[in-house]
Length: 115
Image (spheres, rainbow, N blue to C red):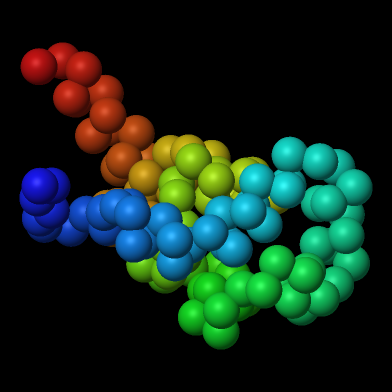
């Protein structure tokens, strides 16, 4: 029997969340392809429909709200593809997740390496 671990401030991507986020993650995975990135840029709404995103997922995408995307079942590994489309680095997303600026998050990472 599996047990869900609650880590404060962490959005867990367990089985139910992965199922919930499947359309969003599948769409973000498609961004590996340049033609898909161009198709998205040409008509985002049509692209959301193509992958059957839920309204919550569409709203998170429209707002470019990475935290809401995670809450809608997005996997950070797939969302990184979308973040790249927006010109965001992994450190930018880490800052968003923790409520820090990118520079604060980078300094935090460096400090963790000193321990």
